[in-house]
Amino acid sequence: MSATRERQTYGTITVVGGGCYGSWYVRQLQRAARAGALTWERLVVVDRDAACQFARTDALAEPAGDATGAELVVSPWREHFASAISACGERDAIVPSPLMPHLMVEWIIDRVRARWPAREAGLKALSAALPVPWQMANGDAPHYASFATWTCPVNCIEPATCPHTRGARDWSMPVAMRAYVDERRGAGEALGGPLLFHCEHRAYGVGMFGAAVVRDAGATVLAAAEQGPCEFLVGTVSHCHGALGRLVVGPRA
Image 1: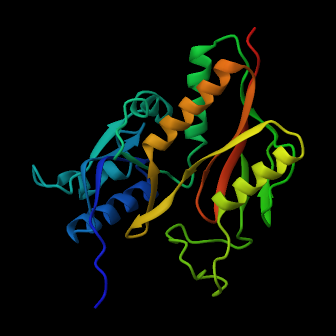
Image 2: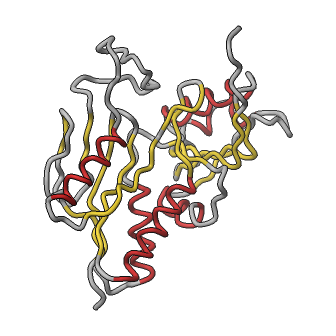
């Protein structure tokens, strides 16, 4: 007899973007909810365009009180998360877009700058290459990394057997990034972390991470910055891919 997975329960699920990706994520989440795989209190799609693709779908036309309904919040992403993450609950989750900027790192940087307007706070280039087969350095911009040297489908759930190689997926970005921080600290760097927002498959091809993880990472950086200069490896990752950066907070003026 096969095991039955317990239904997942969420507070607010926030989907980043109302374009083709976000609309697909909503449809999949609604399918999962109707199948009893998960439930939520609110399903929110954030897009600055009131006429985005999601707004033109039937996902907004759910009957009143239908537990699978979704709503559109018209707002720039950065402005929305400025308040949403600070007020998030432990059961809230974020569904990132493959094309979004490094929003979660930006949220942390904004918190530091709000606390200490005169202090340096931002991303700096990594001091050494990451232990992955593909990466793209962008100076002080996010550093993109992947264990895949091929193009992966956007809906890949990163199973234990890689659909491309047909062999065991014996890699994981969170594990590799912890090893990277240990290696850099062993080389004499004062690199903290890693602070990772791990997008994991939850149901029906949709990946997400907890909003509280971002809030808590911000608190970690603020607490360290209270003591003086600090730096952390921060990133949004899955098992196979990641957007990372060395977040540096300078000394007090």
